[in-house]
Length: 410
RNA sequence: CGGGCUGUGGUGUAACGGCAGCACGAGACGUUUGGGACGUUUUAGUCCCGGUUCGAAUCCGGGCAGCCCGACCA
Image 1 (cartoon, chains in turn yellow, cyan):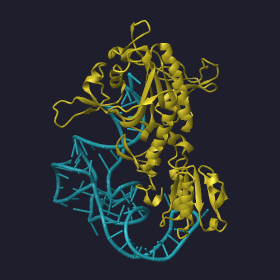
Image 2 (cartoon, helix red, strand yellow; image 1 turned 90 degrees about the vertical axis):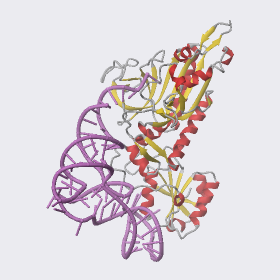
Image 3 (cartoon, chains in turn red, green; image 1 turned 60 degrees about the horizontal axis):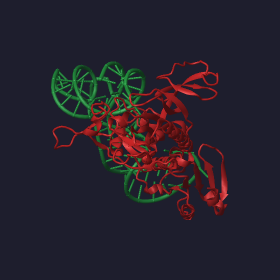
């Protein structure tokens, strides 16, 4: 991608009403645009990050047998009534202009519509277990959207649902999901803490959250300084300075961002929608379910909160919009164009700053802001030595690499 | 949903109740190119409605919007 052709431009200063780091940097870099409070456009650079995250999620969820599907955002009233969730205030009613009474709510959760569908496809123990997921926009009328991508009224979520014969099988799968989640967050460059959390009306036991430590987080967890056992403060009886119930080390209270959660639902939904299967003896039983979420857009915001410096973002390699940020400082020299083409041919994702009117300093500042992992500079100085300068984001040292060897270094 | 703060070109800021100005950006032309370079030139603004006043960006009332704190967040 040539920066001279990019749809967006960077901002030198962040809008004054943005306080959170993720909002400031993502808006300045041209990753997102705020259309309303808690409602963002993912601009071309930002969408590439979302796609990277989605790819990681897909790979890992597919590995544990998840099948991807895509459910509607407009969810008709009848689907919410079985669980009494039509009137839940978090929903946005969607009113057709011709209808007198609205009959839809924009989907803020998809257990209801999925469970009613699943009854058409699951009828025998031979049809179990199953797991389906989607990556979709959720709409929640948050009374207070905040902190950039961390709490939006419209956001991207991966929601996975599993169907089982028994609680035993549910918890077998629950553990698979847990491990897949750790791989997802690890590949996304985040350290997360597996945290015990309170169950709700629709769960059969405690639930678990994946928490990334951050001072802007809305959650507070009590986490063991040694074994990382953690409980969410909303249900924990622990307090600062207590001994860890698992290993005896000191417990500390920390602020954190919930980037994922997993819920053992049991049969609450299958009872509401009469989702049953026949076991080997022909007995009708309710299907046992689990649901598992990752806020994809929140994940993006969290990564920025964790990986940044004063100048901009430091994208972890697997989620960076581009791997290489190539800067040419002497635009009259055609050599850089060729380097760009060669790098692309070698398979590297390159953002090429070929702009002619920007000064060197501005190009460096933009490279720092956008935050691709590898910066390559081509200038008169480097070309005299048939080389390019290479620098990793977040490191000060630079090195010269012969042009012939450049593609191999990436 | 309660509380606080704030609304001036695209962004950041200034203007006692008295001509809305500056910088950056963006557009044009030219000169530049190793940490946000320079010259000439163009462009673009007081959130909305009402009130007070000779006169309102400024004061008052109401709305709307944004941010922050809290409540809420199966």
